Structure formats: structure tokens, C-alpha cells
Image (cartoon, rainbow, N blue to C red; front, side):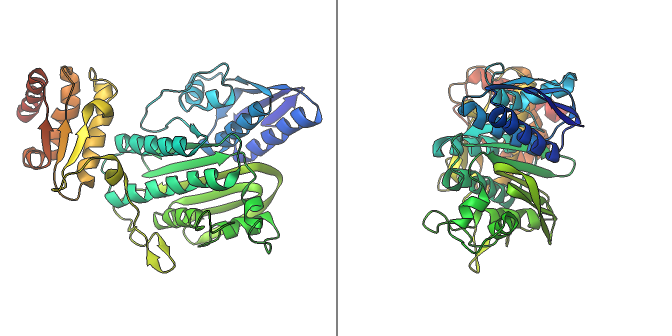
Length: 411
């Protein structure tokens, strides 16, 4: 068996699947509620594979038990790559915050799972995710980032408005670069979609019916709180980009693994709360102009560029390097900055990108080359001069940037 338990210890062997996460939840309930233990151990020592959706189920439930006074101890996987994954993704901290610090990992594939407990933290979590995406994925189109941001905002907002989760929610993104998809997973330990929808729809008799209703336009428990388009719109975005969409809540699971296909199953073991998984494609072949149509009208969301970067009357966007870079001394620090600059340049409808270097008195030669030398090489001389402008540059920093660009010109 991939999941076993002995006393107050739960163990996982081999590949950890979503069905296995249900078994872990059942074991946690039995240990704490039926047998009366106030502490338990989750042992991933022999776990060989684990993915975000099933781990977010466990993380969310562990937060719930910790809030209820149950101590949880985590045993990390023995295999080194798996150990790093648990630490980098923040799963270790969320499961066992006493023994594991929050992750500070910044990568191009996985990003740490982020917990949010109120509207302010939710906004910060979404901003951080968009920041990570801009630094991780090259050549975003503006409509792609616009609709991805809308979907993340909506499904995290559902946690705040409907879930009634005492521990808030968790959101995590994974970038599948080869398939040109991002996976967004949002989990909570609230009352679940079936319970909330029944408050306003007494004709819903089963949990599977509730999940099907949740992805219909305009279905919500209370129109005074929301319009009921968050899950529907997210599902539509996944459909339009040939992605996938899943909901697990209560005793039901809904799957939409490809456009035009939706099915649901009743589960014996409930998920106490909700997990939403959206896999959204990003590619030139996708037309998102009709992704969000509500009451017959097309909705175009406000996007990250409009809300996070200052723009003047000419459409020039200001990029303040000091607040956007985690250091100025290495190529590692410069790589995500260059990716973000490229994406922002591509997202600007008109005008230039103004790079403001205020309060930066020194950058390393490798950083200057990684950001500005390679940016010049990628854009080409004419496009670079047309699209990029510098402001408030220290003379020494200017010399280093000029040198990096000149070396790329003659290379």
C-alpha cells in the first residue's frame, strides 16, 4: 500500500497520487478524532514522486489541524531531489512550521506555495505570482497575462468570500515550460463548494451536482457577495487554451481534462474544503478574446501592467530596478530581471520601457551583461534604442552597462 499508518504515524511510499491524499486525510481524521492523539507524524521518507495538487490538499489540512491544537511532524523524503522539492515549494514549512523555515526559493519551474489569510495577503500573493511568472516565462502576450491574472484573482478571492476557512488558503503555481502551460492550484480547509452553494440553491441535492453548478455562468450562493463567474470564467480560460481544469470539494471531484469534456465522480472520503486546479496554456495559437463572456458581453480584465507600473501620457512604463531585483552582483540575480524586462516590453502597447536606476551605485559586470547586454542582443540595436530608455543612472553603472552592450555588439 502506498499509504500506511501505525499508531499516530502516517507513511507514504512510492508515487504520491491524489487518491493517496484522500487516504492521508482519512488517516489524519482517524488518528486525531477517533483515537484522540494530539500529535501525529507524516512520513514521506520513501516517497518517490509528489505533485502540487495532492500536496496542497495535505498542506491545507495540516494547517487546519495545527490551528485545532494538533502537533504535526514531517519526515522529509530520503531522496535528495525530493527533499529539496519539499523545502523549495514550501510544503515542508506548511506541514511542519516548527521545524522548517519558509521557503525563499525563486525558480523558473516551481514557485513556493503561498498562504493567505485575508484580502491584503491575497493581493500580495497574486502580485508575487505574477511577478514570478513575468520573470520565468519568456514572450508573454498581454492578453495571456491579463487572463491568467484574472483567473488567479478570482479563485483566490473565492477562498476569502465563500470558503469560511479559519486558516485561509494556499496558492501555488508550476510552470511546465515544454508544454507551455502554467498550473495554478488553490486549496482551503473551509466548508466546501457543495455546502456554500446549497445555501442559495436548495435544488442541489448531491456534491457532484454542486460542482457542475459551480462552473456555470452566474451561479453563486449570494449575488450580494459575488456574481458567480470566477470558477466559470477560469474553466473557460482553461478550455480556450487547451488546458485542464479540476475541482475537488466535499464528496465530489469534477474533471475537465480537455475542451468540451466535463465529468464528475462521487468520493467516499471527503475533502474538507476545496482544491481548484487550473492548467492554462500560453502560446501564440490561442485566441482569448472571447474567454470571458458574461451575460452576452465580453469582459476584458484590467491587467498587471496597468495596476503595477507607472505609465505617462505617452504610454511609457517605468521599471524601478532597485525594487525589482534581488541583488546586483551576479548573473543569477540578473536572469529573472531580463526575462521580466522582455515580457514588459512585449506587453507595452505603445511607448517605451524606462528603466529607473535610482539609488543603484554599483552593479557587477556579469549582472550588467546578463540584464542589459543580453537584452540588447535579444532585441537588436534598432528595437533596443526604440523601446528602452534609462533614467537616473550613476556614471559608474552607466559605464558598466555601456561596456556590456559594446561587448555584445562586437561578439
